[in-house]
Image 1 (cartoon, protein in one colour):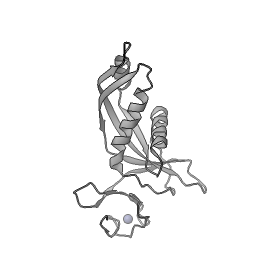
Image 2 (cartoon, helix red, strand yellow):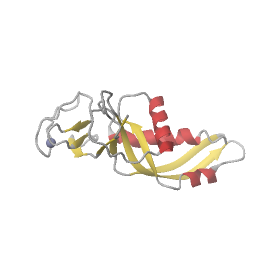
Image 3 (cartoon, protein in one colour):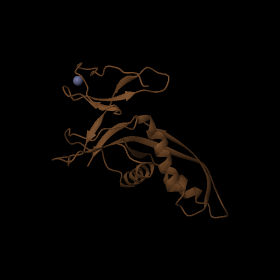
Image 4 (tube, protein in one colour):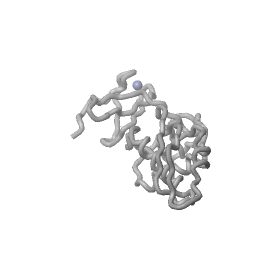
Length: 181
Ligand SMILES: [Zn+2]
């Protein structure tokens, strides 16, 4: 059982309402964004979170929250069956820092990878709209790293050179939450 802690805004002490699985809160009084930090073995606490909203979030449809972090991939080793390894292309493609996205709302692994691939290739810029309601974020930010690794593996597996093993390192910066249509 997770410990029950009173959720109040660390800035203005207003109560933060949310569903039981929710990991992100927006203060109804001062509009600050907070994420639940419940790393195993550490006391549960709230950490300040930057939330950016797409400008086109208007009307009745709720926005969808995505974890976003800048990342750098270093391809260590890429073994393939047979010849024609595209290791050089892989190293070149990942040489530039990228922005990784994964859904923070509830969705299955395949959909999460699809969203992650699409947004990685589209590379949207940080949105600067005004605050709008969004569906609850229930995926903890610490899952971003593992899901982003899934996205990288799924892209590399499609290179067409019969990938056998792939070793790489992924370094991610501080996560933000983007609310997209
Ligand atoms: Zn507040």
